[in-house]
Image 1 (cartoon, rainbow, N blue to C red):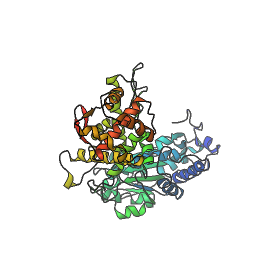
Image 2: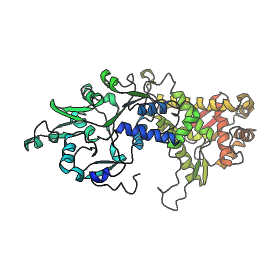
Image 3: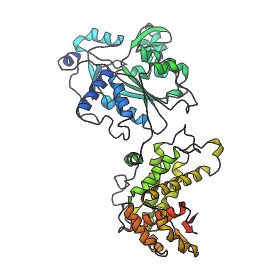
Image 4: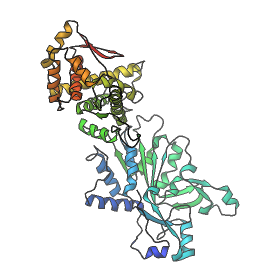
Length: 484
């Protein structure tokens, strides 16, 4: 957020009396990053899992005063990190007032800026630009033109008697208007090759030429791009000479560990529902996500990233985990509203509702693409995730005897709209299940004395018996029915 007031100098003369000195945008980024590292501050606050892999690449690129290309699959925080780069700029930057392109009053680079300073001298008016105004971005689409990015001859201005070689005859595009700032192009391969060629001079010679007229406009701008790997982006590619002119390619990746994935999802998912967005006095249930339930989601998403049934060139976004956890919480929240429980915990029966969060977020291979195939694959991945988490804390043979009552025809149905106390009451019909649930709660490091956690642990045990082929499960409107 901007400070309450920008610096006070309003003319070039007053600015000269301060300690302000001109620095290029890239030098400004470099010096401010050095200061941030010396002070022990985070480079990009809130970005998790990249401390030893991606962040060093960014730091080195800024130190080297490079333009950057963030290359990675979808949902790897590329755009988020790009939008955080302006935080490395000075909070306020002086520019000459009254001209179309932001230009430094001490060292103007445009003809218009130089003319303004020559005419008014120390009385040249200046205004202060906040760093939030020094960042612009453009989503690359096939219909983007050179006029959008760089500019075009303004026929009206030419008709007023100005020469075509005069910068004031131009209608400038986004890049010149971002002079003294950072300009980002998202999904660079979607930009047509002829438009990419138009960026050559901006990246190497740091100037622009419009429609063949001898207009050379020196620019002070840092260019940043994002793209998916070319083997995935079939819509287009980055032309080789353009890649050659980009100083650093920053490769991103998905979370390396389940713990990192849980932390990232917890930081970004909307799980704390009681807040100012609701009418005061609304009594909403407090939803608790046991860690093992969060682990199930992240294990399933991690398994999806290596599944042979999913197009790995497309990737499985981190947004999948976030959406699944949010729907998991919503299912528990709905249960709390129906049962009147003030606190509810997410359970295995809530996993049925995360299917809606995965549709469209994974790209099946053509051979596997059929009706309901996506949902069945996700169900299988969730089952394998439950199996993995269970095997980390227990041996299924320890719980084998729990399936004996089902051999005698017992059927147990547990729904996502049933209160925890009712689930516990139902578990009492299976000899040893309640004790096993308490044991599992202890192994999963949740409070077995809490009915919500005990119910969640009990459902987890039953699901583990199912995924280990000790029980059969039928999904019905009333919930999951376990039988033999």
